[in-house]
Amino acid sequence: MGDRRQGREFALQMLYQIDMGGGKETETFSTFWEGKKATPEARTFAQELVSGTLEHLESIDSVLRQGLEHWRLPRIAAVDRSVLRLAVFEFLNQPQTPPVVVIDEAIELAKRFGGDESGLFVNGVLDGIRKQLESHPTPAPPVD
Image 1 (cartoon, one colour):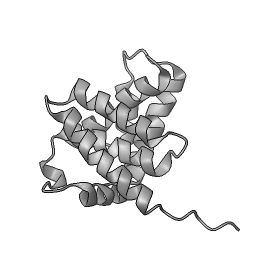
Image 2 (image 1 turned 90 degrees about the vertical axis):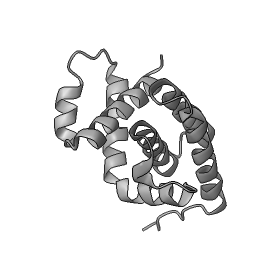
Image 3 (image 1 turned 60 degrees about the horizontal axis):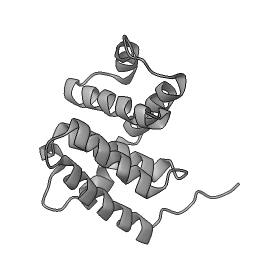
C-alpha cells in the first residue's frame, strides 16, 4: 500500500475518532499512533489531512451541504461523513491531486470502512461536488 493511501486511511480513522468522541486533534495525534506501523511519509500526510480538514471544517461542511440532495449532514453515517469531509478538503486544498483520484480513493475508503452502500453514496455525492466546483472554481488569491 502506498504512503498516500495509507495516510488517507489513518486520516479517516482519526477524523472518525474525533467526530465520534469529540476529542481534540493534539490528543488524537498523541494516542492514535501507538502500535501503528506507518512510514514517516504516511504519518505526515495523515496528520496534514486531519489538521487541514479540521481547520477548514466549516467551509467543507458548507460545500457538503450544497452537494447533498435530500440529506442533512448529521444524518449521514459517521464513516461516510468523515470520508466526504476528507475528500472535500482534498478537492479544495490539494490541487496537485486530480479530482478523479480523490474520488477513487474516497470510494475505496468508503467500501473498506463504511456500509454496503457507502461506496455508491460517496461516489454520487463527490461526483456532484466535483462538477459543481469545476463549473464554479474558486478564484485564486491575489498576488502581492
